[in-house]
Structure formats: C-alpha cells, structure tokens
Image (cartoon, rainbow, N blue to C red; front, side):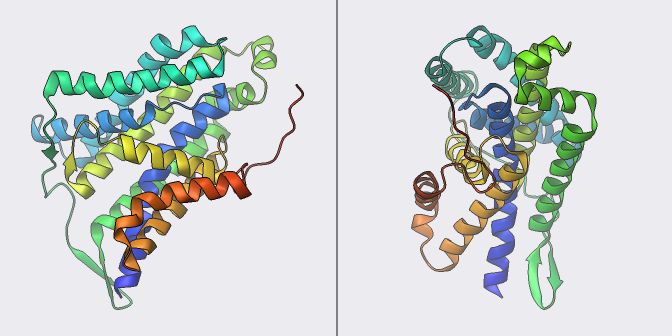
Length: 292
C-alpha cells in the first residue's frame, strides 16, 4: 500500500519536474541555449503565488494564473535584456550569461526580501485522502497531477495547432528559412521564453502548495533536476521532457521507498551520467551528424 502511495507521490513530483523541463527543452529547441536561469523563474513563480495567496487573499487558481502571467513577462524581460544581444555570440558566452542571470535573480530576491524562508498556508489545496482500490491516496497528489497534465495538453495544443506554435516549429527547424518566409524570429523566441517561463511559474506555485516551504535558493536543485529530465527525454523534444520528468520523479520516489532517501537527490545526477554515457541523445532523441 505504501509502495503505491510512493508511486503516486513520484508521479506528482515528476510532473513538477516535467513542467520546468519543458521550458529548458523549448528554449534549447529554438535557440540552442541551456537557460540555467530557468530554475530561478520557478522560484519567482513560487513567491508570486505565495504573496497572491497571503497578501492579495487569492484562492489557488487565480494565484496560479497570476504567477504564470508574471513569470511569462519576466521570461520575456530576461530574454530581451540578457540573451537577445548574444544571439550571434558563441554558445559558451550565452551559457556563462545564463549562469550570471541565475545568480542575479537569486541574490536580487535575497536583497529585496531577505533570505528567510516562507511557508505556504496549509489550506490552499484539499488535504483529504481518496480511497482507490483500498489504497489511501492524497487528494493533493491527484490534484497536482491533474493540473500538470492539463497544462501539458494545453502546451501541445499551442505548439501543434496555433500560429505561434507553427512559427516556433519553423524557427526550431531553420531560423534563417523561417525569417525568409516572413516569420518574426525575435518575437517567436520571446514567445517561447514566455510560454516556458509561465509553465515554470505554475510549477513553482504547485511546488509551494505541496511542499509548503519556499526560499530564494529553492530553484537551484529542482532546476538542475529538470535539466536532467530534459536530457533524459531528449533535449529539445517536448514529449521527451514530459516523459523524462515523470520518470525522474518515479526513480526518486522508488529510491526513497527502498530506504535510500539520502540518495534521492544524488540519483538524478547518476541518471544524467548514465544517459550521457549510454544514450547521449536521450530517450526520444536522434543522433545527428554535424558537418564541421
């Protein structure tokens, strides 16, 4: 019974990783940039949701939407200020900038509000248990999983059925050809950052309501794990990020279920090493030869 509960918890945690990983993989698919500041956008979303609930007295869904909107605008701001001037720079320059932006966001938040942690109110989501085939499963876990799946389905709809989604796929395939066809590449890249950041903001609010404690450096470890999830699924491939996040959450929960909870954070990086050695293109990736 406890094993089934661990599986449900793992899927819920994995869905949070998946929401963050989607931002990594979308941005990489468009501009071939690993945006290491993405985990800190997740942190910003958690704090926006917290203040919306505690100060503005919002319920969960309005706070979630507000956090997504704020993080989308924040993502566009970061892209326009930090990454757009480096569009034609080397990849290492963009990568160093991403690390710098990450540190700037973390310590900027600490400067303006202090480093003390906050605690989400305990009554934001229902805390009852649901009996499924004799197993008591937390309604919070099911609620989080449902929200995450809905957001992922909406993302798939945007990417495959809307005009901006078609533009994103075109720019991902060949930016120069897309520009010649009349697609505004800069706006498309900004839209990609906005959508990825909105999903990270939603993940932040979901994380806060589930794990209660939030603090300015909370985005570092989940951000790195989400990056592992994106690599596991195949960086740049949206379904891969979803599957990678869910798998990583399940692996962590199974490690805890077998009594090795001290290793649950380390196992993500063991998975990263194994993937890079044996399957560097990820579960859904394809090996591509590049001409030098």
